[in-house]
Structure formats: C-alpha cells, structure tokens
Length: 374
Image (cartoon, rainbow, N blue to C red; front, top):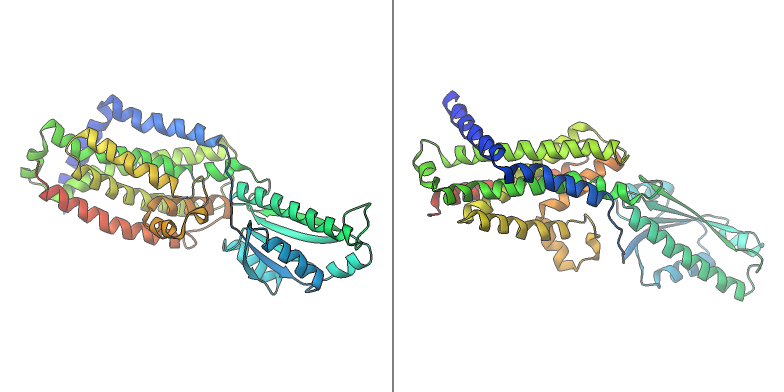
C-alpha cells in the first residue's frame, strides 16, 4: 500500500510541476475562470415557452373555468396539474414540477358578481428568475385580456379592474437574473479548467515523446491516471470554491444549503469531467487534438445543460439525449444548494448519475491509455 501511494505521489508531483511551470497551463487555471465569472455574472436573460403551471381553484365556478380555458388556450402555458389543497401547491413548486401555481380563492365568482375586485394569487418558482418574471408577465397580460372581456360583457365596472393579481416568487424573491446564472457558475468554471488540463495530460506525453517511457515504467494504467487526475481535481475544486465565495460576497447570491452538499456535488462532477478529459486525452495524438476535443465537448455540454436556456424548450429526443450530459446535473445541484437550501440527501438524485458516468469513463480511459498505440 505504501509503495502504491508513493508511486501515485511521484506522478502527482510531476503533473503539478508540469502544470505550474507552463505559462499556458497557469493561464488556463486563472484566466478563463476570471473571464467567465464576470461575463456570466452580468449575462443577459432569455425567452421561454411551454411554461408549466398548476391550478388550485377553490371557486370551481363557470367564471374561474373560463379564465383557465383562456390561459390554457394561449399556447404559452402548459398545465401541470390541478391541485386539491395548499399543501399540494407548496409541494409542486418545491419539486419544480411547475413554474407557476395559480390560486383562485373561493370568493372569486361572488366578488365579480357583486362588483368587487377578485384576487388571483400567482406563485412563481424564483429559482429561475427570468422564467418566473416573463411567465408572470404573460399571465398578467392574459388576466388583463380576460378582464377586458368581462367589461365588454358588462360583468365588471369600467372604472377599475374586476381582477387583481397578487403575485410572488419563491427562492429568489426579487427575480434577480444574476442569482440564477452565478449560482451555477462554479460548475462551468471547474469543467473548463479540469477538461483542458486533463485533456492535454496524456496528449502532452505523446507529443513530448515520453509516452513510451510511461508505458514501460513500473506503474499500472490505473496508477498513472490517478496521478494525472488529482491535479485537475485539486485545481478544479479550488477554482469552484473560490468563485462560490465570490458569488456570495461579490454578487450577493444567497447560500442557503450546506457546505457538505456543495463540496460533494462539485467533487462528483469534477471526477466525472476528469474521466471525460482523460478519455479525450487518451484518444488524442497531439495537444492540439486534445484541446480541440475538449472544446467539442464543452460547447454542446454547456448549451444543453440548462445553464442559460430551459431544458424543456428542447425537442423531446434531445432532452432524452441530454440525460448523459454531466453538466446538467451540477447546474441543478448548485442552484438547489444556493437558492433552495439543499443538503446532501436532497442533491443525491443529481449525484448518482454523475458517479455512474465516472464509473464508465474512468475505466475506459485507463484501458485506452494502455492499449492505444502511438
């Protein structure tokens, strides 16, 4: 066991020296993360469609049904369920099964019939502030249209609205887009750093002519890859944690979860990305090919992750294909930890797919490292 650890330590020391002595590698650790931190921290918002909503209709009258038909027929909203009590309303937002929850009170019809404003409560999932803000804007405009129809039918006075909207957002009360982007930024930053460092590690050995020396050295393929993995894990985790602190104190993003959940989520994700990076590096013959392979993975992985665009906007076949995208799981985990206050148990549904992917990519990278010839 001691000899095993000493061999791995020797490889780790060599990898750290190669990374820290190389100016380009040092820039990869510092430059791109800083750029991403500030660029994405002030990023723009986006549009949406197929907004899932749930309804808690205590009125159950013809007027409330007319309003809901008006909403459903808009083509913007998609019903996610009809609720029976307040507990179900809380649960459907907590579980992210709906973006909006519409609560129509028992006095809805009676208030309108007697010329009083009728209140409709709309609760939005503020973990995605852009979606919540735009969705509430859409719903507000539909309420105004429905109210105008009531005026034309003589059911409400023209001097004031018959319906009054009471909206609120959970988890991100002020609907700040910055919270949405920056809370998940640690995953993107660590992926870029780890992916580039690991995708170049084996390719660098081939390009420098030291690959054959590694193969004949008294190291197993597993020991070599463990030694090459640890520096990437250390640098990636360090960058992610530093920028998590920056998100809290620079951008004012609330941290409501546990540090344990944050570290475990980042570690599971980084180990998975190390497996992908080493897989790319084992296939690449040159550092240029390794760098190209890493960016061929990074670009679609980020685009399809839900970091900037809702996953539900994608075609169903693409949503199914996205299940093997590790970035989507860390995005969900980080936003759940920062904004919702998740602990380790709550992020487990996002961790086990990452660990499963790591269990596939790491052994495959070890096999390719030993069997792929120069």
